[in-house]
Image (cartoon, rainbow, N blue to C red):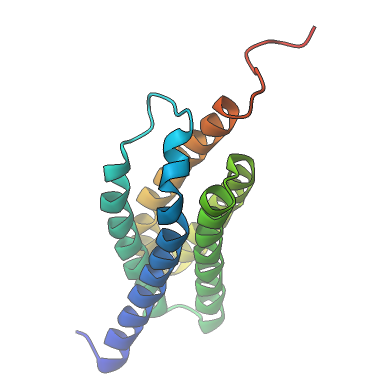
Amino acid sequence: MFSRRSTSALLIALTACFAASVIGGALTQPNLDWYATLTKPSFAPPNAVFPIVWPILYAMMAVAAWLVWRSGGDEGDKKTALVWFGIQLVINVLWSFAFFWMHSPSFGFGVIMVLLVAIVITIVFFDRLSRPAALLLLPYVLWVGFAAGLNFVIWVLNSGVDFSQAPS
């Protein structure tokens, strides 16, 4: 079932995903005190949720990439799908830089919107090669969609602008 080449590909996918996790964590962790000072909505999860959810999502992402790599599809299609996977992984890390490292919910919101688009494109390309791979990315896009909403509300709550008043 697992050839040496297939096992190596899975290890590479896991390494890439968890490297993104480590880099994102390194950008986030020193800034959790700043995050604690922000006004957050009632639906913001406790900080303890994130180190549980993200490793599961990164593992699912790695398996999805591996399934695409080993699919029987066209090599050009696989390359395109895996390039998009890499692009969304880089944007994922960029969000941690924008939101946490730069202390910028507005920049973070812009990045996370681009991330959502990149994930959806990745899912479309993955689905052409492996339906299970595409399905493995659905929890990720849903979580990032939730995070985008949270990011937006944090931006609004901490911007000093009163969005509740309609212009006259």
